[in-house]
Length: 508
Image 1 (cartoon, rainbow, N blue to C red):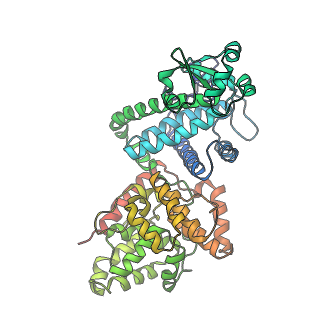
Image 2 (image 1 turned 180 degrees about the vertical axis):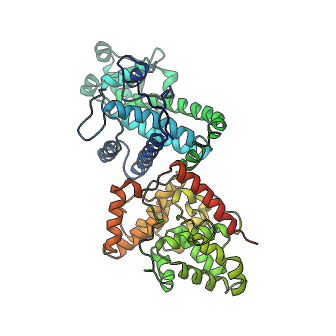
């Protein structure tokens, strides 16, 4: 469904005034109407940007040259604004700076709606938006930094050259890493000390007459504190208004899906179908399964049973790595009959659900393997369950013991636990991949258990993984249709699919 779209581009209009700076505090919501297709595209591309910010922030030292180059490349590929001058003129093969700023503005507010729903989601969103803001503010020239401060009523006075000269020795003594030359070259801001308590506490600034003298590279601390405060309040207000938005049947499934959306390759397409034998699964689980699937496989072998959450998570993963329907039925039957389920009961109570998972029963929907975000955020395990993400749902001590059992080095375990402590669960899994495969850098951003398996097989096969699979992976990056996007129809269908499939997996 299309909304009537009208873009206000006239110079002097309120919308153009809103975009006269490449950076903003997102204080004013967008007023124009947009199509649902544009709504979806903007949301997915900003989500990709924020996930990249998270991954790069853990992989590289923040504000280092490598960190900045990686983020700059991502801004360029996703068409988000970095230029300081506004213009309507399109660059060859791209979009105008005005359009980039418009996209930045609208996409931020869309993700506010999706990420205001729980405390965990709000915390993650605020952290990534702050890291993004810090990088963009750091890229501004001194003039544009001052313009930004004034535009947002942060009217901190720039210290004059005469005052800097008179206070040179005190500024050098109180400010880290400054010399006489840098004091003359750099701007200083005079800020009320109560607005700079973090810097005062760490003794990084000079105090005089109730003002803190802040060097240009530290002013971002003040601005970030203000940004965090505004965004936290805005998310709380958005959460209170969410029921009204969710009553719109066009937006509700889209927003629900966005908070744990997967924006990578579609693993519902079985590239290796029939190429995995049942005899290989035990060996593969030890060398190419992510920890969540290794945990499920071990529990299944030991208990000869998994409750419905585990069967859904593990069953769809096995389907994604190439098990056929016949193999899946044989696999689950052979394991269950070793426990308290005989062959007749399996055929009556469980076989239908396996066929249903492969789209051969019920609505005949071809179900998709769970992404990392779905595993982390939905259906947390309770006592007796083995599904979920071990990095998210396991007690740190139990996780440590598990990693020790799998021969992960003590230093590697500490690195993983630090990432878990910072709630970087996917990055902790990626570190587990690097440690168990003896590589310094995995060379990819982990978003899906089946991606873990595919990358492991490529690495262990010396890059000799099935040529067709590599070609299709490249095609998926070039063809937007092959990427899983949370469109209105798809997200609503996914919600119905999982609910419908869930009912067939209930234990007696």
